[in-house]
Amino acid sequence: MPDFFIGTDILSVPRICKILKSKNKNRFKTKIFTKKEIEYCDNKPQPMIHYAGRFAAKEAIKKAFLSSEIISNIPLHSIEIINEEGGNPLVNIHSNSIDLSTCKVSISHTEEFAVAFAFLTLS
Image (cartoon, rainbow, N blue to C red; front, top):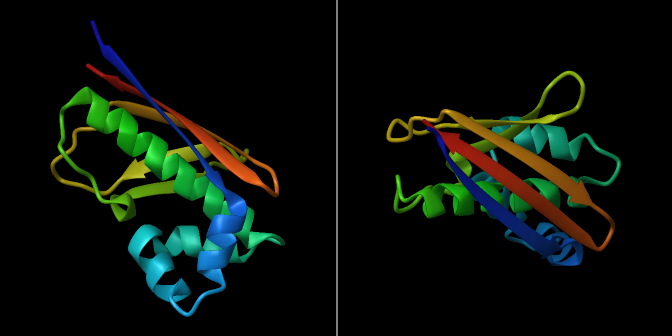
């Protein structure tokens, strides 16, 4: 019988906007996001909400993994959120220490908030 774990996160889009307008924006981007994620977000009309949504998704996924107790930490940069052709977010984990069975994520955002919900199945 598989085990199920969830994680959720919500954050303020203006908070991410402030970071991305600061002198440390490039350091923040490269520490948290992969090249594919940066390219995806930067090519959107409102990049800030997409960065916020992906950041919330990474935090939700991290919480789901931590609650499973199969790991004690995972860097956010090791979690990659890309989009399938239909636009659905797809989770890629770049870590040799994690055997990923299934991790799904849902992301939603407005101009004020980004929220994400992660569902992890381990067998």
